[in-house]
Image (cartoon, rainbow, N blue to C red; front, top):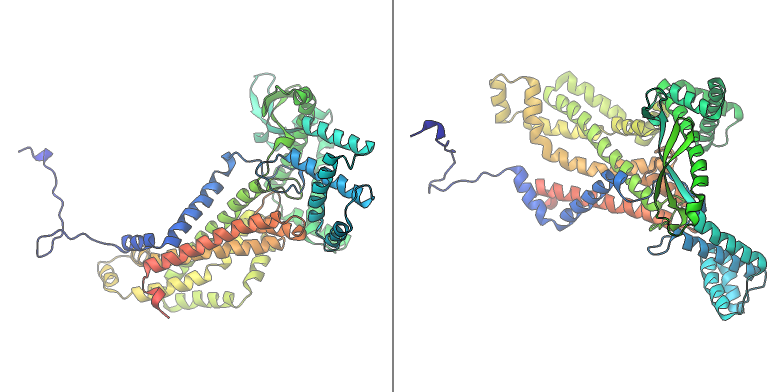
Length: 536
């Protein structure tokens, strides 16, 4: 017999009837119970879809979330009509409404009373929709005709819809004249980017520096004024000086590069618009159209041209003409990231401190728990707002502010679990074998508490998303150009009577995700502890 080819026999546990005993674990048992919970399974599918959309957002066939087209402001949702068709309807409805107010488009007295009642109740959308129907019928019947001025307006709109192009600058290239190497300008050092722009406009670096410093100052002051209304000019200057002091050199260079790149891209768009003007009127041209244009000398750009008014907005647009579908998907990316990262960070801090307090006891337990008690006595939201004010308003600081306040409950829960387990036989056995403290805590106690931690973490994610939404609603959360579900809802509240889709769709997306996470948390709780639902 060849000993090297001999298969190792696997030892298997058997009972008194010589039947193999199949082992079971808490995780397998919990998974089997979870699969029987239909709402939990549906919630897993919904949460998975949301996460996939958030991860794949950059490669999805959607419009850029921060692309502004002012002509497309407040376009209503449509599954079949292009933005050009919606703009035409909007303009025609406006012309019909003006004609009705001037007495040139006749309606019955009952219709007239109804229209004025809608106006008095601020239902302008109903007036425009109704007048579009009435005006179209009267145009078809020949009982109403447009004036020469109205015909010119319609003709100009039709020409605009056919010829307008949306130019997107993908990359800007700088070619080294000596080596012939092309460099992506966005990845060059900020000093070199400024020199390239100064060469492009034919001026000195010093003049360019003065210009972008002045524009950055105006940009920061505008943001400060929007966040802190009703202050004196002196107070705005103090806040601006404080903002500059807290800004690192890296953050300042980033603002400078964004400012200068925006000017170069703007120049590239102007040149591309002129070069592609003929292609816009050519019906045989295939869009989107990709082209490399020469900006000046060694500076070139890759641009993409699309027919601006052929776009379809399935969920409508916002007050700056940005696609709501794209904004909701990217907003979900931010909100879900805040929920998961905030939960993971707070749970990590809570596990470490709670485990140390529960196992070591004594002064360590007393010191950690007194800190928890003191922080519990302070208003949670106030602490988050103070943290945001101290560390600045950006996404990373928002993660940090939420996480450092939210570990308190986790630490108490883990402490209780550790205290109930630390005198068990397997822990006594580990001590008797000389296992160090850290190994007992993190290799034996914490893994045996994971079921409770997982359930709690699942239920904490919606809480983080709601907190971020509340902060964004107040203007203290995610800042432009980024968006979250909370900031989208906050932006839509002011015009919810005229443009209800701007509020409904982000609110619905957030509500569905929060419900799914709560159902999943309840399912996990019942799966890991099947007796919990029967307890009073």
